[in-house]
Image (cartoon, rainbow, N blue to C red; front, side, top):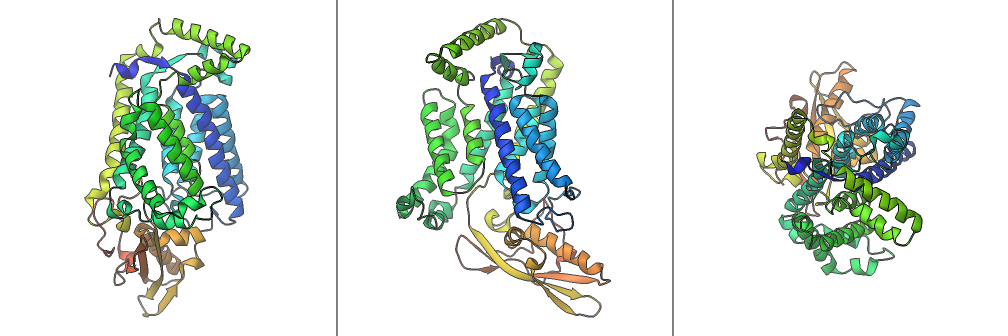
Length: 454
């Protein structure tokens, strides 16, 4: 615990702030482009799949939605520049998380991770160097930060790797399924297409990803093995970037993984450059002098025992959440890849191929009249594709249909006829077609017996 409050070089955290701001801008700006290309996406009048507990999060009408997205982009730039840092970081965290909660069909693991990192950034002293705030007020400048500020992003990235590896310990992945099909579809890639045609490449990627996720953290914590582990991480994410479209995740992962190096590694790199550039050499020497003088003093972070207790409590809660939440799927019977119960927030990334199709049958309780509903009549292409493979979304859509028919004065029952297949196996009935979904609610603690086994 004493180690968590020891001062370390702040250089790594400054690098994190700059790259975080750049990636935040890129991600939100991409959302803005998607929003305008997919007309109707996030439209207030359209149907959205909501996260349970966050049904109250609604999209804004135009032009306010566009203004909001561009404002979040501006906050990301301010974060990178270190201008009005606490305010801009707070606004970005709430703005980014707001867009994340707008549509469950857009769930991505890196978006979930970015939400956590966004709120963490509010509390980190990452504006104490190379920032416009320091330029305006030099008293803010500090060359050190307590180690816990560095430990938490290291911990979060370690959790992503380790639980990502645990999730790969299943029969399909060990047989390189569905990687064989995925990379086969990309055999026309101009750079690595001929390699992707080879069956051994699927096994190489499957077992390489498994071993890296499971063990990379243990190699990163040791100085002698750290460069080799980081090289493997770079290769792994570069391959993912070539083969798959996964947004900012490779860049975010590499940045967080780099934090396992000594806290002064960006300064050492600058020192290497300074040997080849006189002006930078002078700046480097001044920085070293400040660090040597500041580490001789008692840092401000160690001055308040009460704050220590608060910080340790917060760290303990954060760590407990991330250690326990990925294990919750063990509370439910069946394969989590099929039932989806406990799948989200568990770092089960790029593990399976799952597709489905079907329809809903709405029965008037008074007259017995039956109406067939095709989801595509209400949903976007992405929403429809996700609907068929996620029972909680099937249930939400059934309740939506119930309300739609209630507005017409009808009391109805809703049944789902959905067929689904996992990892290119045969199609199976997914939802019990005899269960009235309007009488069911999604439970986070009890298994859903209306999800049929594969």
